[in-house]
Image (tube, rainbow, N blue to C red; front, side):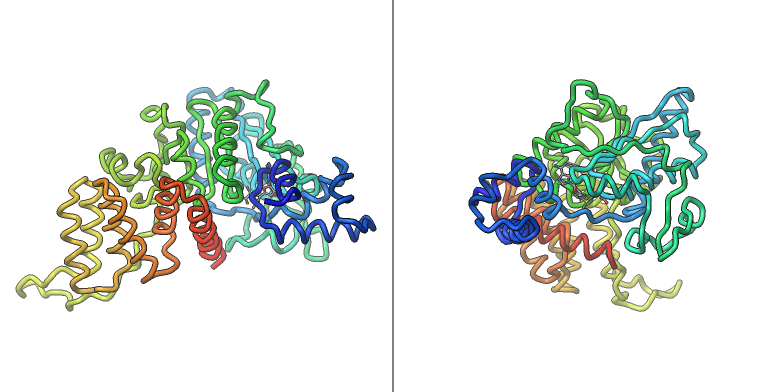
Length: 422
Ligand SMILES: C[S@@+](CC[C@H](N)C(=O)[O-])C[C@H]1O[C@@H](n2cnc3c(N)ncnc32)[C@H](O)[C@@H]1O
């Protein structure tokens, strides 16, 4: 790692490539008319470092990003207020980028009828430019990527030139401040927040920084609070003391030690039975791969025409075999699940999903090499199989292959981002 990369890593925690860092330095040297690279770095002031940081952060965000997280958060806030309707529910959004995430929280809670005196959102980002944009409350087209834009009519005023300004009722529910998660002062905020959103930041950190960041978040969150992460970040939280909540597509977690009491009162009715949640859906250190949080694979064509009432029983359709394999795996019946996968593969030798499940079954039975082989075959057949990539990344980490793990995580994150955008 170059000295410039180390300096920016120390300032932000971000795992930055040499080319990204050098491009930023070149840009700033041009802006400040500096001529010598080494002198520029040696004489860098805190203000200049901040300007450099601005060029390497990724302030990508939009309103209602991963909307189920906001639904789950609202449910949780309601349960808090059901116990004590006088209380203030404290929520943290870090990093908040340009304010899209914390303002979405305020809009969703307001729309749900939560009185303004009952909640407050604190929002932090390392980038002063982001915080200034958030405080201005003015947004262009990029911030409005959600399909349903009704919220814009309700909570924004047209500011001309394609821009919209957030209304004051929402704005006053959020307090913005510049801040670095890794340097967060815990002295006054230990166990302070009921809800923490930390989404799409840890994907840019290396392993030790991720661990340090999670330790901060763990300290900030109340013991019975809920944390919402980016999808690609769930595995890291599971490795460091958190367990996934069975919310659908919300990527919510709670502190592991708090397990039974922390289950959301409004868990979706499709939540896995407790045994499944322990065995496959959310083993510690694993993403909730078989939980209902993930979309069920698209049904394939039936192998046989639907049987008429009086006709002899048709062989089970391929998709049913896989569904059955998943169900059996969730029940802990490894052997039967494996048989279903093999039956499925006999009909569909190129089924990536079947290899993925076989990988899980082998991991559960402590055969990591076999698991790895199956997951590799899975991503060979389906290169954008997100969960298989996450599992391979975890395996690589367990084998101390940090570079391999980082490459797999980065690939998974790119796929996730692409899937979100489509
Ligand atoms: C991709 S955005 C995520 C925003 C929002 N949470 C979301 O998911 O839409 C990442 C943000 O992290 C901020 N950031 C990077 N390093 C940080 C750190 N150490 N502490 C706080 N914020 C940081 C960047 O400035 C950037 O705005």
